[in-house]
Amino acid sequence: MLPDEGVQGQRVKLYRNVLDVSEMNSIIFSVKAGNDAHILLSEEAARRVHDDKYAEIVLGGWSGTKSIIRLGNQNAHNTVDTPNILDATSYREFWLSWDHNMVKVGRGLHVGQEVFMEKRYPFNIKHMSVWNGFGSPGAWQIYICRQIISEPDRLYSAMTRML
Image: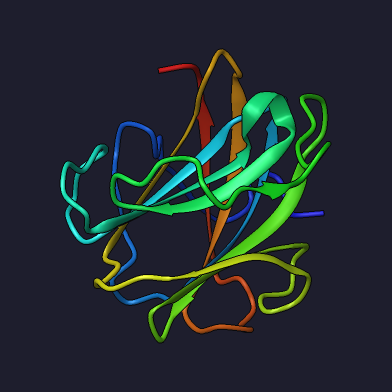
């Protein structure tokens, strides 16, 4: 289990702010939501990006049954079946890494283990934001890691609501 939001760190509302991840290549996070936890990794510092230089990760989309990494304005092809990946009443832990033009997502607190999605991307990742969609309120706890398979060194906590 990740530490409480009161443990050293700064509180950030990531759905209103964009986090600079230009010097990082992974995060460890936990999310509490019934469905539709979204993460945007982009080259530009914007909540919504209108070119092809972004990756959107959706966990528990399609009423909590599927997940996907989509690049740019791609549609919902190549989803992964992930029933019950999220829970509205308790936090579920995940990690996300981007290195050597590959985005990977896995379960748990150890970057590089239990991978369940990966996709190549052709741009520089410099910014990140998170939100919940489709009527699913959620809470996020996000650790920032300086290197893949490093220990979490900073905690950011964010509460999100339907946008």
